[in-house]
Image 1 (cartoon, helix red, strand yellow):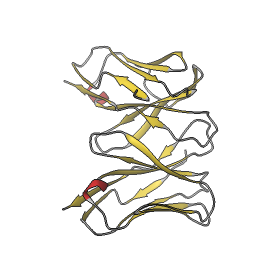
Image 2: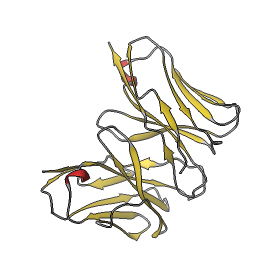
Image 3: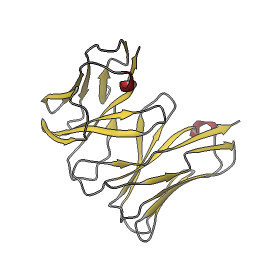
Length: 111
Length: 114
């Protein structure tokens, strides 16, 4: 089946440092959705990228979709303790009604 | 006015028991899902339903039986619980099968098997 590889699995940063998580695929991605799951919480939709080379921003978060639509990244500038959680990318794929989730990146921010 | 609500939030039970988890969404969505999240946070889809019809059954043991009485509800019954069933189970919903709409998740049911 389709696989979306997400790295790193864990990231520990000092508050104020930047953070990036990457999603890669050997096949062309349909579209990419990003979700955030706070500790003890549930995944919450952040954004969707559809077009090749697309870049979207939400305050300190920057989302990119690669030109070949085989990779995507989420970059957080100047992390805050409220950024703690697990970030998932997910590809819509070709199977109706299914999202292919990456394994997630668990972000810890030290104050 | 929770959008996707699932009950119970916590479920602690013994191996071999049968248990059910209920899910309801008030978003008017026509597609609902069950996911299993293990201790390493991996989100694995189990089932999806569209307008009460089973769309995805992701090689889940037949001890797990979903039921969708209407498009706003998707329940999960588990027979003969095993230690490996311990996980967080999330219900989710979205509008449409082929659309690009996001999935909305419930708060999760934390299942612990003793």
